[in-house]
Image 1 (tube, rainbow, N blue to C red):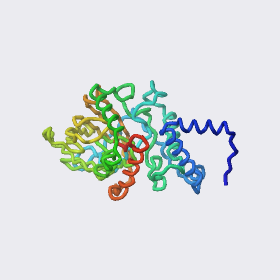
Image 2 (image 1 turned 30 degrees about the vertical axis):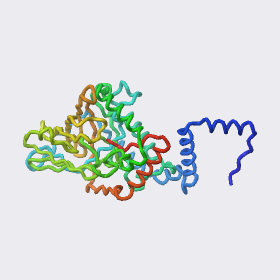
Image 3 (image 1 turned 135 degrees about the horizontal axis):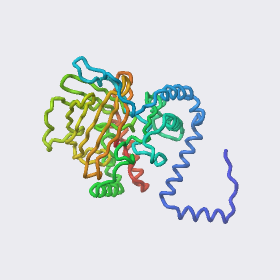
Image 4 (image 1 turned 90 degrees about the vertical axis):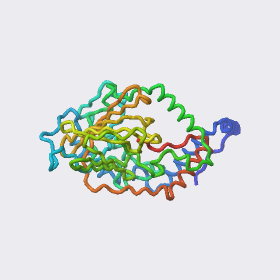
Length: 374
């Protein structure tokens, strides 16, 4: 049993006054911190003991990754791989995960490309942080299922940030319309009613309706596996989660009429040399993707740079959201088949817990927890 020293009356009174003066948010934060600490003490293993269990795996996977630093300045392998009918061969299973942030960190402000050694050091730091264990974290422990990023074929990248245009490696400023829309969304997020139940859920990904794993495909979610199929007239891109499938024609047909809108947009593809160029428009107005509007125009470029890597480059254009288009490049390493089904059950039972949590946050005066919108 733990004991506490007796407090002097004056100190006790000051403590009581401080507690009365504290805001509800301060009390909530203190309570959550106390709960987290209690969780750590109750855990059968400390964070250090849990890390020890994975120590050899971390060392082995890191060693394999740092031996294959991705260099975007290196030209694609020649000759390129071909399908039986002569098109560049993109078929296979691919992973879009990355430790490289979307926007270039300030410490690399004038350094769009790292040296190989800097890339390795950056990668090691990220793996160390990612493989850490905190017993107070109440969520899936992806390491237990071999699903943490460091357990995948992800490897160091010489880019300090994924955005290659604008030249500063940052997202462009929001347009005036984009600023107004974001401010309105922030204001709406503060006005919640616990009685609205399911409407408090942040997006369709949480509700297992659509995965929102692209397009475009950004590398910040554990559900990052894709399969590419090819025929002489089509390319099919299957993405997890929620088993989304994009069937993209190659025959030059025009886009659908503007009044026809879908969650994945309307995609058309063509070959530019060894690069597959996919242009997508006609997004559904209720789709959530980084605040973009339904009129966003997306161009994706897939280039197989070696037998085990695809260079995936995206250009996003939406004047109603950003003041200029922006471009990012993500290397996709090849993974072994199959593409496992993302069996999303949460709409059956987890939704009760999610709504309950949203109601508790609302009564505590906290904003709704946001789900990933890629």
